[in-house]
Image 1 (cartoon, rainbow, N blue to C red):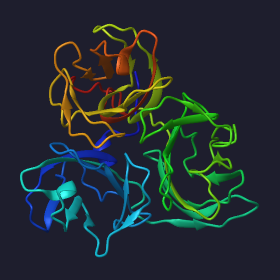
Image 2: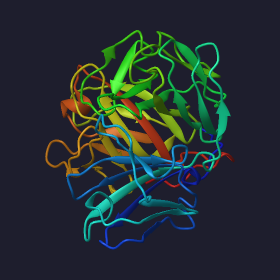
Image 3: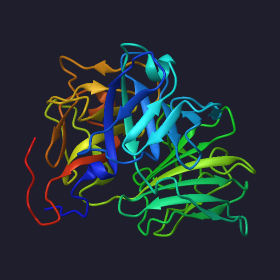
Image 4: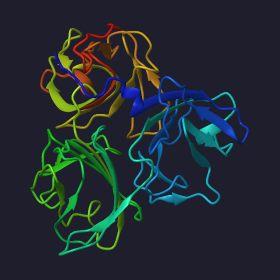
Length: 356
C-alpha cells in the first residue's frame, strides 16, 4: 500500500479545460474543490488547433513565453497576455494560440512557492540565479545564468530529483534537454524532439543529482556562458508523483505500471529510438480506454486513437498499456514515464480511495 502525504493532489497540480471566446479578458478559473491555487508553472496547448505548446512560470514572470515544441528563444509580451489569479489565470488576448472563439484548450498547472524566490550567487564556477521550492510537492523552479564550465546548483528539494527539464531562454537553436532517472547522467532526451536518448557526457558532467544539488556540465543548452536558463525540477512524492520506466511487450494486453495513485497526467517517451512524446490526462479522457493524446514535440492538434491503438487505461493505482503501437509498447522498447496524481490509492490514514 502506497501511503501518501498528499491526500489532495489538486492542491499542487491541476488540469483545466476551456473554450476560447475570442474576447480579451477571458477568465480561466479552477473550482474551489480542485486546483484552488495560483499557478507557478502553466503549460497550455490548443486541442482543436495545430498551434503552439506554450509555457509560463512565476520565476521568469507570466509575460515571458517559451514554446515547448520549439528551440525558440523566450518571447516577452508587453503588455502581458496572462495574469495569475488565486485559482487559475486570465487571458488578455484574442490570439488563436490561447483564445480563439470556439477553439478548445487544455491548461496544465503546477504550484510551487507562489512566485516567491530566493537568490543565490555564482561561486567557484557554479551558476547563480533564483530558486523557488515546494518540498511537499517535490517541485522547484530554478532560473540561473550559465558559466560555461561544470558546476552544481542547489535544488532545495531534500530528495533526489528524478526529472529535470532545462531550456536556455536566450538562444534560438537550443533544445529542451531532459534529465530522467532512467536515462541517467550521460545524456538524455529532448522534450521538443522525437529523437531517442543521446550520449553527451558534458551535459550533466556524468554526475547524477543528489539530495541537495544537480550538476551541469559545459554543454550548450544547460550551461552556456552568461546565458539565462530555466530548470523545472521534480523529486518523486509517494502517492503524488512518480518517474520511471517500463518495458513493452508488443501486445494490446500491455504492461501494468504501478504508481500508487490514480494518474491525472501521464507523459511517455521511448528511449532508444525516434518516437513522439505522448501526453495523456484524465481530464481530457474521462473514461477508459484513454485515447486522447497530445504530442509535446509537435504543434499538432489533439489526436484520438481508435482501432488497434487505443493507448492506455488509467487505473486507481497506475496505468496499463492497451496498445501494441511501437511508440508506446514495442516488445523491444524501453519507455520513460512521468506522472502526477489525481488521487492516491491509499490516503495518509491508510484508507483506500474509490476506484475509477
